[in-house]
Image (cartoon, rainbow, N blue to C red; front, side, top):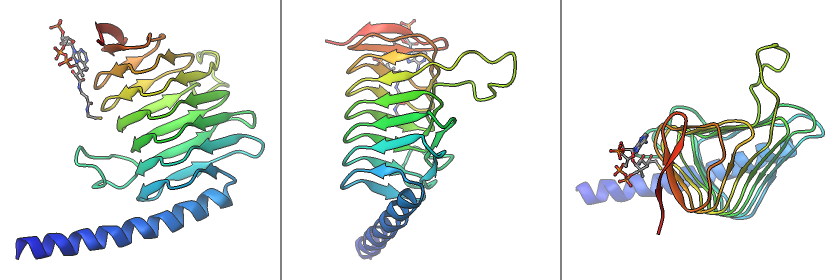
Length: 194
Ligand SMILES: CC(C)(COP(=O)(O)OP(=O)(O)OC[C@H]1O[C@@H](n2cnc3c(N)ncnc32)[C@H](O)[C@@H]1OP(=O)(O)O)[C@@H](O)C(=O)NCCC(=O)NCCS
């Protein structure tokens, strides 16, 4: 009986994923967001693209946007927003997002196979740019195979080198080299990988 119910649940999930694929591809088209082939969506990803700005998503990316789409718990839908008409968000192939917020006022660039844990934030701006206390916008680059742990926040001007892992809850304010584990607030290297 338990197996039967589980099979029904799985069938329901397949229908749900197919439904969200149609909805999200449609909404991406409406917002002039370029989404690559074979991307998967659970829940509704929110695209907010200003005219003239760009959001480009590579093939085979996964977007978990509903509370139960990930066993670790997702607080908010994935949201990709450009904050200025010059803003660019570029995402490579095979990246994963769970309740991830990505905001680009200048340029946010993610390589391939970047894994963004639940409830992560990547932003190249302090957002309230008209407030004299805000800093200067500066692009963010996250190289191939980077893994951001749960709740990581990557702030303006940061470059994270390939294969590096950022520990849960870290606030990344400075560059992180390739092939390291880094963690904390502010995020610092704690281990070399390999
Ligand atoms: C970063 C991480 C992978 C390191 O794990 P590890 O290699 O086993 O490292 P350790 O647990 O031995 O910790 C090494 C040191 O870093 C510190 N540290 C580990 N994770 C930390 C974190 N997230 N924030 C701050 N410090 C951290 C430890 O306290 C320890 O400090 P010490 O040497 O002074 O005792 C792990 O702690 C982590 O954050 N995992 C969560 C990944 C995640 O979010 N997964 C789910 C979503 S995808």
